[in-house]
Image 1 (tube, rainbow, N blue to C red):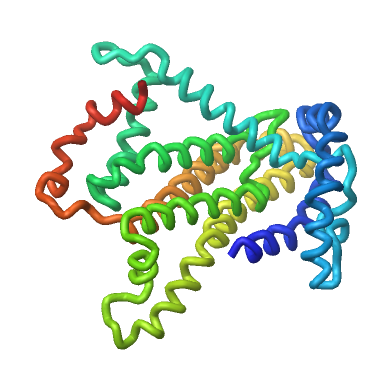
Image 2 (tube, rainbow, N blue to C red):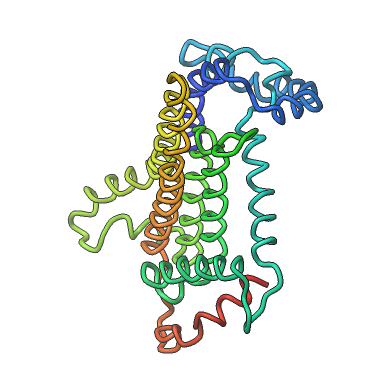
Length: 308
Protein backbone atom coordinates (compact mmCIF):
# COMPACT_ATOMS: atom_id res chain seq x y z
CA UNK A 1 0.00 0.00 0.00
CA UNK A 2 2.71 2.46 0.99
CA UNK A 3 4.82 1.56 -2.04
CA UNK A 4 1.85 2.14 -4.31
CA UNK A 5 1.18 5.52 -2.75
CA UNK A 6 4.83 6.54 -2.96
CA UNK A 7 5.13 5.30 -6.53
CA UNK A 8 2.03 7.25 -7.59
CA UNK A 9 3.39 10.36 -5.91
CA UNK A 10 6.75 9.93 -7.59
CA UNK A 11 5.20 9.44 -11.02
CA UNK A 12 3.40 12.75 -10.74
CA UNK A 13 6.32 14.72 -9.33
CA UNK A 14 7.89 15.18 -12.78
CA UNK A 15 4.81 17.10 -13.92
CA UNK A 16 4.90 19.16 -10.75
CA UNK A 17 8.54 20.08 -11.22
CA UNK A 18 7.83 21.14 -14.78
CA UNK A 19 4.96 23.22 -13.41
CA UNK A 20 7.26 24.80 -10.83
CA UNK A 21 9.82 25.71 -13.47
CA UNK A 22 7.22 27.83 -15.25
CA UNK A 23 6.13 29.66 -12.13
CA UNK A 24 8.09 31.95 -9.91
CA UNK A 25 8.10 30.53 -6.41
CA UNK A 26 6.69 32.80 -3.69
CA UNK A 27 9.31 34.88 -1.94
CA UNK A 28 8.80 33.03 1.34
CA UNK A 29 9.66 29.70 -0.35
CA UNK A 30 12.84 31.24 -1.76
CA UNK A 31 13.79 32.55 1.67
CA UNK A 32 13.20 29.19 3.34
CA UNK A 33 15.39 27.45 0.77
CA UNK A 34 17.99 30.20 1.12
CA UNK A 35 18.18 29.58 4.86
CA UNK A 36 17.67 25.81 5.04
CA UNK A 37 18.09 24.54 1.48
CA UNK A 38 21.70 23.40 1.87
CA UNK A 39 20.91 21.30 4.96
CA UNK A 40 17.82 19.82 3.33
CA UNK A 41 19.77 19.00 0.16
CA UNK A 42 22.52 17.26 2.13
CA UNK A 43 19.90 15.16 3.92
CA UNK A 44 18.15 14.22 0.66
CA UNK A 45 21.38 13.26 -1.11
CA UNK A 46 22.45 11.11 1.82
CA UNK A 47 19.18 9.44 2.80
CA UNK A 48 16.18 9.80 0.46
CA UNK A 49 17.73 10.02 -3.02
CA UNK A 50 19.57 6.65 -2.81
CA UNK A 51 16.34 4.94 -1.75
CA UNK A 52 14.39 6.53 -4.60
CA UNK A 53 17.13 5.56 -7.05
CA UNK A 54 16.90 1.95 -5.88
CA UNK A 55 13.11 1.86 -6.07
CA UNK A 56 12.79 3.65 -9.41
CA UNK A 57 15.65 1.61 -10.81
CA UNK A 58 13.25 -1.32 -11.08
CA UNK A 59 11.26 0.79 -13.56
CA UNK A 60 14.30 1.85 -15.59
CA UNK A 61 14.57 5.39 -14.23
CA UNK A 62 16.03 7.29 -11.28
CA UNK A 63 15.17 10.04 -8.81
CA UNK A 64 16.39 12.96 -10.89
CA UNK A 65 14.52 11.78 -13.98
CA UNK A 66 11.31 11.55 -11.96
CA UNK A 67 11.67 14.56 -9.67
CA UNK A 68 14.04 16.87 -11.51
CA UNK A 69 17.50 18.00 -10.46
CA UNK A 70 18.34 18.12 -6.76
CA UNK A 71 19.43 21.65 -5.88
CA UNK A 72 19.45 23.86 -2.81
CA UNK A 73 16.90 26.14 -4.49
CA UNK A 74 14.21 23.42 -4.61
CA UNK A 75 15.34 21.20 -1.73
CA UNK A 76 12.27 22.22 0.30
CA UNK A 77 9.29 22.14 -2.10
CA UNK A 78 6.87 25.04 -2.22
CA UNK A 79 3.94 22.86 -1.15
CA UNK A 80 5.82 21.77 2.00
CA UNK A 81 6.40 25.39 2.97
CA UNK A 82 2.82 26.38 2.14
CA UNK A 83 1.31 23.47 4.06
CA UNK A 84 3.42 24.32 7.10
CA UNK A 85 2.13 27.89 6.87
CA UNK A 86 -1.44 26.55 6.51
CA UNK A 87 -1.03 24.65 9.78
CA UNK A 88 0.14 27.80 11.56
CA UNK A 89 -2.63 29.91 10.02
CA UNK A 90 -5.27 27.39 11.08
CA UNK A 91 -4.23 27.68 14.71
CA UNK A 92 -3.99 31.48 14.54
CA UNK A 93 -7.39 31.87 12.82
CA UNK A 94 -9.15 29.69 15.41
CA UNK A 95 -7.44 31.62 18.21
CA UNK A 96 -8.49 34.96 16.72
CA UNK A 97 -12.06 33.87 15.99
CA UNK A 98 -12.46 32.37 19.43
CA UNK A 99 -11.48 35.62 21.06
CA UNK A 100 -13.14 36.06 24.41
CA UNK A 101 -15.96 33.55 24.73
CA UNK A 102 -19.21 35.04 25.89
CA UNK A 103 -22.54 33.32 26.43
CA UNK A 104 -24.52 36.54 26.72
CA UNK A 105 -22.94 38.65 23.96
CA UNK A 106 -21.03 36.47 21.50
CA UNK A 107 -19.14 38.37 18.83
CA UNK A 108 -19.37 37.79 15.09
CA UNK A 109 -16.19 35.68 15.09
CA UNK A 110 -17.49 33.47 17.88
CA UNK A 111 -20.86 33.07 16.17
CA UNK A 112 -19.16 32.07 12.91
CA UNK A 113 -17.03 29.52 14.74
CA UNK A 114 -20.02 28.14 16.66
CA UNK A 115 -22.04 27.73 13.46
CA UNK A 116 -19.14 25.83 11.89
CA UNK A 117 -18.72 23.64 14.95
CA UNK A 118 -22.45 22.85 15.06
CA UNK A 119 -22.56 22.08 11.33
CA UNK A 120 -19.74 19.52 11.58
CA UNK A 121 -21.11 18.17 14.86
CA UNK A 122 -24.56 17.60 13.32
CA UNK A 123 -22.98 15.89 10.30
CA UNK A 124 -21.15 13.49 12.60
CA UNK A 125 -24.32 12.73 14.55
CA UNK A 126 -26.32 12.10 11.38
CA UNK A 127 -23.69 10.00 9.61
CA UNK A 128 -21.84 8.15 12.38
CA UNK A 129 -24.21 8.50 15.30
CA UNK A 130 -24.02 10.20 18.71
CA UNK A 131 -21.10 7.98 19.71
CA UNK A 132 -19.14 9.42 16.78
CA UNK A 133 -18.80 12.81 18.48
CA UNK A 134 -15.59 11.53 20.03
CA UNK A 135 -14.08 11.79 16.52
CA UNK A 136 -15.08 15.45 16.25
CA UNK A 137 -11.60 16.92 16.99
CA UNK A 138 -9.96 15.03 14.11
CA UNK A 139 -12.78 15.71 11.63
CA UNK A 140 -12.86 19.42 12.52
CA UNK A 141 -9.08 19.59 12.20
CA UNK A 142 -9.36 18.18 8.67
CA UNK A 143 -12.06 20.74 7.86
CA UNK A 144 -10.17 23.81 9.09
CA UNK A 145 -6.81 22.76 7.67
CA UNK A 146 -8.15 21.87 4.22
CA UNK A 147 -10.29 25.01 3.99
CA UNK A 148 -7.36 27.26 4.92
CA UNK A 149 -5.12 25.41 2.45
CA UNK A 150 -7.71 25.77 -0.32
CA UNK A 151 -8.17 29.51 0.26
CA UNK A 152 -4.48 30.41 0.56
CA UNK A 153 -4.09 30.65 -3.21
CA UNK A 154 -6.48 33.63 -3.30
CA UNK A 155 -4.02 35.83 -1.41
CA UNK A 156 -0.79 37.42 -2.64
CA UNK A 157 2.51 35.70 -1.73
CA UNK A 158 0.72 32.39 -1.11
CA UNK A 159 -0.15 29.27 -3.11
CA UNK A 160 -2.70 26.59 -2.25
CA UNK A 161 -0.80 23.54 -0.98
CA UNK A 162 -3.83 21.42 -1.90
CA UNK A 163 -3.09 22.11 -5.57
CA UNK A 164 -0.13 19.69 -5.22
CA UNK A 165 -0.76 15.93 -5.26
CA UNK A 166 1.87 15.33 -2.58
CA UNK A 167 -0.29 17.23 -0.09
CA UNK A 168 -3.68 15.88 -1.17
CA UNK A 169 -2.43 12.27 -1.21
CA UNK A 170 -0.96 12.81 2.26
CA UNK A 171 -4.34 14.08 3.51
CA UNK A 172 -6.13 11.16 1.85
CA UNK A 173 -3.67 8.70 3.39
CA UNK A 174 -4.14 10.32 6.81
CA UNK A 175 -7.91 9.83 6.57
CA UNK A 176 -7.39 6.24 5.40
CA UNK A 177 -5.05 5.39 8.29
CA UNK A 178 -7.34 7.07 10.82
CA UNK A 179 -10.53 5.20 9.98
CA UNK A 180 -8.66 1.90 9.72
CA UNK A 181 -7.11 2.59 13.12
CA UNK A 182 -10.62 3.14 14.50
CA UNK A 183 -11.84 -0.10 12.93
CA UNK A 184 -8.97 -2.14 14.35
CA UNK A 185 -9.19 -0.48 17.77
CA UNK A 186 -12.94 -1.15 18.07
CA UNK A 187 -13.23 -4.55 16.37
CA UNK A 188 -9.74 -6.05 16.42
CA UNK A 189 -7.74 -6.81 13.30
CA UNK A 190 -9.72 -9.95 12.42
CA UNK A 191 -13.07 -8.26 13.05
CA UNK A 192 -12.01 -5.25 10.98
CA UNK A 193 -11.05 -7.45 8.03
CA UNK A 194 -14.16 -9.59 8.52
CA UNK A 195 -16.48 -6.68 7.78
CA UNK A 196 -14.92 -6.47 4.30
CA UNK A 197 -16.27 -9.93 3.55
CA UNK A 198 -19.91 -8.95 4.05
CA UNK A 199 -22.63 -10.75 6.02
CA UNK A 200 -23.19 -13.63 3.56
CA UNK A 201 -20.50 -16.27 3.99
CA UNK A 202 -20.94 -18.08 0.69
CA UNK A 203 -20.13 -15.00 -1.42
CA UNK A 204 -17.43 -13.73 0.97
CA UNK A 205 -14.56 -14.97 -1.28
CA UNK A 206 -15.91 -12.71 -4.04
CA UNK A 207 -16.83 -9.71 -1.89
CA UNK A 208 -13.63 -9.57 0.18
CA UNK A 209 -11.13 -8.81 -2.63
CA UNK A 210 -13.52 -6.26 -4.15
CA UNK A 211 -13.96 -4.46 -0.83
CA UNK A 212 -10.25 -4.67 -0.08
CA UNK A 213 -9.32 -3.05 -3.40
CA UNK A 214 -12.07 -0.46 -2.92
CA UNK A 215 -10.60 0.50 0.45
CA UNK A 216 -7.04 0.61 -0.81
CA UNK A 217 -7.86 3.11 -3.55
CA UNK A 218 -9.64 5.50 -1.20
CA UNK A 219 -6.51 7.55 -0.39
CA UNK A 220 -6.00 8.06 -4.13
CA UNK A 221 -9.63 8.97 -4.78
CA UNK A 222 -9.66 11.47 -1.89
CA UNK A 223 -6.36 12.99 -3.02
CA UNK A 224 -7.18 13.18 -6.73
CA UNK A 225 -10.62 14.68 -6.09
CA UNK A 226 -9.20 17.40 -3.87
CA UNK A 227 -6.24 18.09 -6.17
CA UNK A 228 -8.20 18.07 -9.44
CA UNK A 229 -10.69 20.75 -8.54
CA UNK A 230 -8.15 23.11 -6.95
CA UNK A 231 -5.71 22.61 -9.84
CA UNK A 232 -8.45 23.27 -12.39
CA UNK A 233 -9.52 26.41 -10.55
CA UNK A 234 -5.96 27.73 -10.55
CA UNK A 235 -5.59 26.94 -14.26
CA UNK A 236 -8.74 28.94 -15.07
CA UNK A 237 -7.42 31.93 -13.12
CA UNK A 238 -4.02 31.60 -14.78
CA UNK A 239 -5.61 31.53 -18.23
CA UNK A 240 -7.67 34.62 -17.47
CA UNK A 241 -4.55 36.43 -16.29
CA UNK A 242 -3.22 36.29 -19.86
CA UNK A 243 -6.21 38.10 -21.31
CA UNK A 244 -5.86 41.61 -22.64
CA UNK A 245 -6.70 44.51 -20.31
CA UNK A 246 -9.14 45.38 -18.86
CA UNK A 247 -10.42 41.77 -18.85
CA UNK A 248 -7.26 40.59 -17.14
CA UNK A 249 -7.98 42.97 -14.25
CA UNK A 250 -11.64 42.20 -13.61
CA UNK A 251 -12.12 38.55 -14.64
CA UNK A 252 -10.16 37.05 -11.70
CA UNK A 253 -12.06 39.29 -9.28
CA UNK A 254 -15.39 38.20 -10.73
CA UNK A 255 -14.35 34.55 -10.47
CA UNK A 256 -13.13 34.84 -6.88
CA UNK A 257 -16.57 33.91 -5.38
CA UNK A 258 -16.48 30.76 -7.52
CA UNK A 259 -13.02 29.94 -6.16
CA UNK A 260 -14.28 30.35 -2.60
CA UNK A 261 -17.27 28.13 -3.40
CA UNK A 262 -14.99 25.41 -4.83
CA UNK A 263 -12.79 25.60 -1.72
CA UNK A 264 -15.81 25.17 0.55
CA UNK A 265 -17.30 22.32 -1.49
CA UNK A 266 -14.03 20.38 -1.62
CA UNK A 267 -13.61 20.75 2.14
CA UNK A 268 -17.17 19.53 2.67
CA UNK A 269 -16.73 16.54 0.34
CA UNK A 270 -13.49 15.47 2.02
CA UNK A 271 -14.85 15.47 5.57
CA UNK A 272 -18.15 13.95 4.38
CA UNK A 273 -16.38 10.98 2.81
CA UNK A 274 -14.10 10.63 5.82
CA UNK A 275 -17.15 10.44 8.10
CA UNK A 276 -18.78 7.86 5.83
CA UNK A 277 -15.65 5.71 6.03
CA UNK A 278 -15.61 6.02 9.83
CA UNK A 279 -19.31 5.06 9.99
CA UNK A 280 -18.49 1.78 8.25
CA UNK A 281 -16.07 0.66 10.97
CA UNK A 282 -17.37 2.38 14.12
CA UNK A 283 -20.52 1.19 15.89
CA UNK A 284 -22.30 2.43 19.03
CA UNK A 285 -21.80 0.57 22.31
CA UNK A 286 -24.42 -2.09 23.03
CA UNK A 287 -26.19 -0.39 25.92
CA UNK A 288 -29.17 1.89 26.27
CA UNK A 289 -27.12 4.71 27.75
CA UNK A 290 -25.02 4.99 24.60
CA UNK A 291 -28.06 4.49 22.38
CA UNK A 292 -29.57 7.66 23.82
CA UNK A 293 -26.27 9.54 23.99
CA UNK A 294 -27.78 12.54 22.26
CA UNK A 295 -28.93 13.83 25.62
CA UNK A 296 -25.31 14.18 26.70
CA UNK A 297 -24.19 16.09 23.63
CA UNK A 298 -26.43 19.11 23.47
CA UNK A 299 -25.13 22.02 21.40
CA UNK A 300 -23.87 24.35 24.14
CA UNK A 301 -22.27 21.50 26.12
CA UNK A 302 -20.42 20.33 23.03
CA UNK A 303 -19.23 23.72 21.84
CA UNK A 304 -17.85 24.92 25.17
CA UNK A 305 -15.09 22.28 25.62
CA UNK A 306 -14.18 22.42 21.92
CA UNK A 307 -13.69 26.19 21.86
CA UNK A 308 -11.93 26.34 25.21
